[in-house]
Image (cartoon, rainbow, N blue to C red; front, side, top):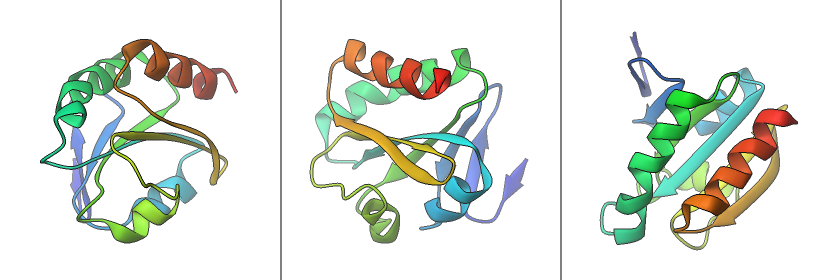
Length: 116
């Protein structure tokens, strides 16, 4: 299913943002986990497949990929200053975030939002 502003990735709860509309997704989904990245960021490229794997394994959480350079308004929702940044939103509000290139740290955040 394709809607304006984002692409759903088949067989996951993963959305790849194509417009600067993260606020709409956060408002319309209870639990959202976002990876903010950029095409030039090596650690972002390393973490992206891991993020996608968690999206395919985790229920009741919507995973969103955001190009931080293309989406300045979306970046403001989590005050992103470093990449990759992973931000968890619960009930429309920023719940927790981390900047990491370690799978274990991302996994902790995934479990935290999934169980909250």
